[in-house]
Length: 79
Image (cartoon, rainbow, N blue to C red; front, side):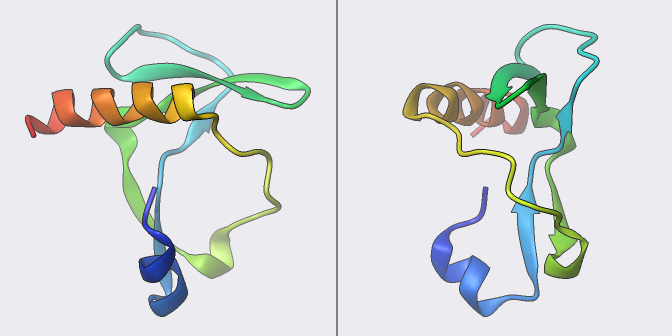
């Protein structure tokens, strides 16, 4: 979720965890189609993590997915 400039200059990045067992509905969860795995982005669990904790890249969100996630963040953060 963090910008490229932040990703390049900091030891941490801002991420949204993915879950394969969705529970509740919007605005906290958004379907995210990772290849071979149905999952949801858990918007209310936004966090910073050390780059060393990141695994392999599992996919890239589409423009539509990012727009939905951004709307969810604006809603739960009241931006």
